[in-house]
Length: 320
Image 1 (cartoon, helix red, strand yellow):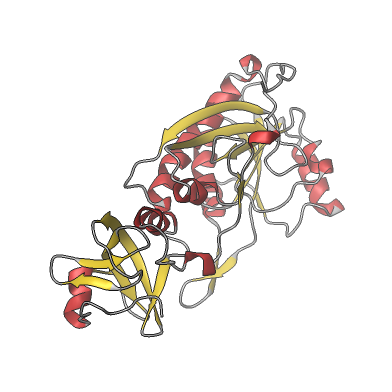
Image 2 (cartoon, helix red, strand yellow; image 1 turned 180 degrees about the horizontal axis):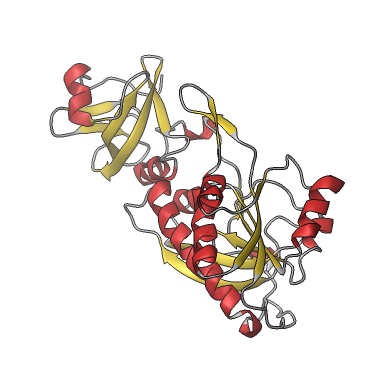
């Protein structure tokens, strides 16, 4: 059984917070904390990155949310420098709340807030520690995931757990749709955790039950038609929107944005049927009905529209 850690004392209200986060998942939590009346003393986020066709420097979702509320923003490239740590010390925070920030917090930073650092993690820890818990849960066929509010320590998502919120994974969920549900759940969970801090009993994680959610790579999103159709359908959902599941058609990449399992047998990667009703590809077990595709240099389209411009006779091989 997981061991229980010591109970913590009451937080003041409003809580004086340093918030650290970068993507939309984190921005939802920042908005919720501000709406709850807490004092956001400083917002940390990643430096602006090039984005879009013009590769224009673009602020993170958290920076945009902070500026819209008139909150002070800092974008240090690292938290290891004395200058960055002096800035955090000057914020005089009760708590630091971290959500998908993207930088390692050294022990000196973890020790700065009076009540420590809390992390909003998008899984039911200790399952799926790491960078891509949403996608890994879908890939694995998990029936549920959730939000864990955790006291941060020097390890990778290893700190004591304060609360868990369970979120079911629907058969139709993509990483994008599950992300949005978890972002809202995380926002609600961190507000509740601060409101009920004195009643929460930190519980140490059972390391023996831990799994690791490795960062996603484009190469792994290439579909291996030798796998069962249900595993490939999960991959299509897990890699939507990033990096996008893909295969090859006549040597050119073809992204697959929506697909579902279907009955069918044949050599893996071979088109079994391609007409206005269905684009069916044989897998290692059963078949995959491709529903939305995107050829290189083109837009996303339904299978029927794709086939209208690019007929695929049965027997065509995908993956080469």
